[in-house]
Image (cartoon, rainbow, N blue to C red; front, side, top):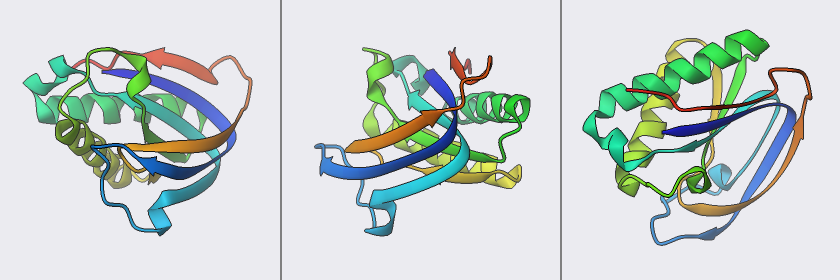
Length: 140
């Protein structure tokens, strides 16, 4: 799994076009915005399929750890296939993101999850402090 974390003053997105693996998303889910959010761009890789729960826990733990360090109460999970050439099955990847969303909600974070399998337009304003841009490889 690969993750790019951006601590942002603001993020907004609009889903524009479905890919062949796009989830059915409500009209409400096709757009989103958040202020003071930790944006987690995530690629779930083929090797992550060895352990579903391990992958969920690894992603949630990394996101939680970074959010606590930057004092972000809001986390945005954004499926982002561009961080690796080794992609897991799309259904598996989506379930990992959904599972991490549940864990993070249970930990008390506000969470927004962008729809899986959509091309999205987005605007992002990075805060620019020393921890505002991080890449990680969460391990199961």
